[in-house]
Structure formats: structure tokens, C-alpha cells
Image (cartoon, rainbow, N blue to C red; front, top):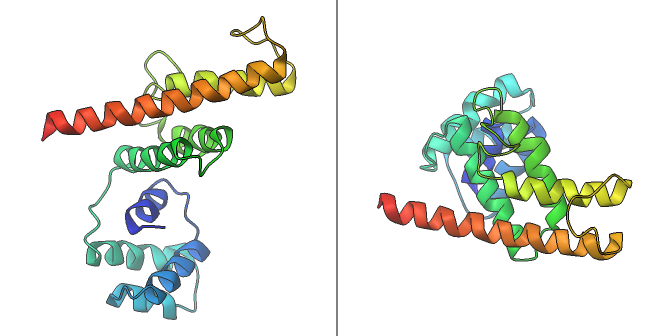
Length: 179
């Protein structure tokens, strides 16, 4: 895992003290060295209260920019959607992670405006995710009702991947506009 992704998960409260220790060990084995990583690897007390400030210091040493909670969420959204579109992560698994572990972590500070997930631009991805869930649990589906459920689920997965591609394309365009 890259430091920026680890820091984003940390900012969202999704990184445990054991995760931090493992990442520090991994980065040191990969030849990355900072005083903070050295301290994290040697830490005997794996309590987050003790590790958090050292981890933040380590991110500064690694030139990882400080992230707001919203920026952290966007880092994770981009990473998971890239994994979905490259077929290295199951679309339902990736979108479920974004729904439960990213979207829910920011909605209090950054509430949705009209649709579930629109605070991160994920409303269409979550639409197809809900359709997948509804297929599986026998609930009413709203799209592809003319198809058997197993075929409809395949379509919903395809739509979810298409929306992941669209989100990434829009993110690229927004970066180009701001540059």
C-alpha cells in the first residue's frame, strides 16, 4: 500500500495500530527509511493513541500531503475505482467498501445533497450497488426487470464498472481544468 492511501485510511479511521506497524515494517523492507518508520517498527506499545502522532510525523517525512477527511475519502474512492476498472477488485466488494467505510465516515461533516453518495459523486455507483444487493436478497429491482435476476445482476455489475470509469474520467477532467 502506498503511503498516501495509508494516510487516507488513517484519516478516515480505517487503519488500525496493527496495520500501521505492518505498513512500517513493509516500507522499511522495501528500502524506505525515515526516523518515524524506524520508531514505528520498534514500537512495543501498539496503542493508536501512542502511534498516531508518530504515523503523522512519518507521513510528513515521506512528503505525503496533509489530507482533510474529504480529501482522504477522495483518495480512497479513486484507488478503489481504479481497482474495480482494472478488474483487480470485485465491483460489488469495492463499491460496498466505499459505501460502508468511506461514505459513512464523511456524511456527518459532508452530507449528501439529494442522492445517497452524491457528496463524493458516487450516487450512480451506489444506485447499481443497491440493485446488486436487491438482486441477491430478493428485493424489488428497478432496472432490467425483464431479465432473470442472475442476468440482471450481471448487467448491474457492468453498469457499476461503467460508472466507475465515468467517475475516474470526470476526476481526470477536473484535474486538467484546475491545472
